[in-house]
Image (cartoon, rainbow, N blue to C red; front, top):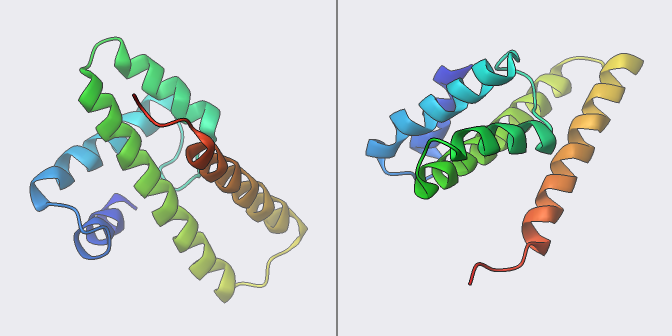
Length: 119
């Protein structure tokens, strides 16, 4: 899954190529830390838990870079889920999972937009 994410970062995220390995590392470390499969969407609580964990031993800019990487990966995963769900006829369990993922993503986006600017 991370191979496709690398392609996404290169082509769509307009990210400088020298930062891509770091974005991949942060996402990989996060999923290892949370013991989650890398194809699952994370909740905002899970992301915050990881960011709190790394902020104890990393610089501020590194935690922000990790947050950006996870935000990009969440967007990438949600777009991939949309492509897959268009190919399959979802059942009730899949509908619940898709709605939960959409709800979590919407909540995260609202929190980002309503967050006060840094001073």
